[in-house]
Picture: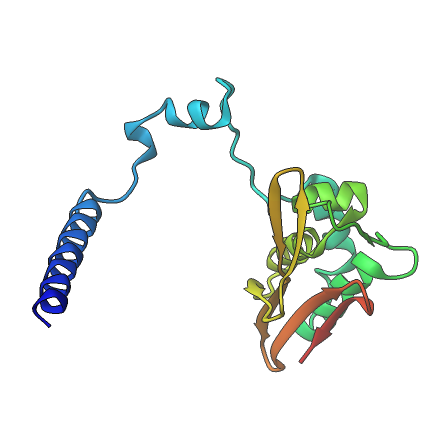
Length: 185
């Protein structure tokens, strides 16, 4: 019995020590990349700086298409429908699903391919440009797993959602297995 109590006491002291070390680590403050400008190069193995990318940037061609096909429409619900038709309709962009194509809105527009994140980027950028509320939302689905070399990949699903004046909430979901670019009210 004394041996068990001694072991529990040592375990308790060990746990208190681990918590104290953990708290001391937290007290160091948040990570500040400017404190170690060489860290990115060390991690990536390159001296080439990583360029920040605006995933929602619209090109002049994109703006022209939206100004012509969507912006003149008064009804928010009809604007939402017009964006979907622009992306997937007959004679429009006809974007195809490619799982490995994670692209910006502009790249998706130019290449006419993309996965759910790419297509959501294009949708969110387009919707915001024409004055619609649009945000990203991670869909609650069971993730799938794969691997590439020694990396393990976890695939999830992302959608766009928003509130339309006078129409309520909507969700834009690119489900390549079923139908391209549907919205639900």
